[in-house]
Image 1 (cartoon, rainbow, N blue to C red):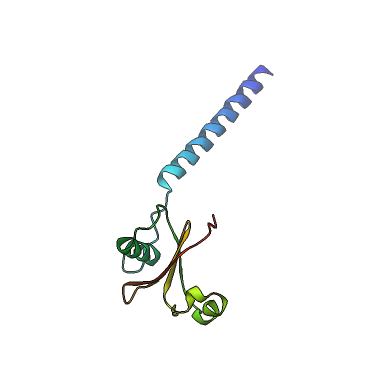
Image 2 (image 1 turned 30 degrees about the horizontal axis):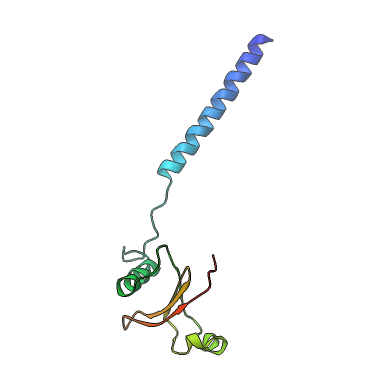
Length: 117
């Protein structure tokens, strides 16, 4: 009976050790690199955020970056979006909303926003 307990304990210990090893290796080597575009560049959202940060002193942190797909609906809901067109970018930082037109390289509007985080 003692041998069975010892064997079972050794098996349980070995199984836990292997599981720990797999998790450690997966976390260390399994980290995925940032998503790249087809041309091998950084993601478009990151590029837009970097462009805006070079033109305006933005708060620290990573913004939520979205591309406008229906500007007419946005303009009817909030006058902030009156000059925004489809294809423009919206960047929401903590306490700041920025509308940006990338093809012209200009910031359309900046508004202090309430925090959504």
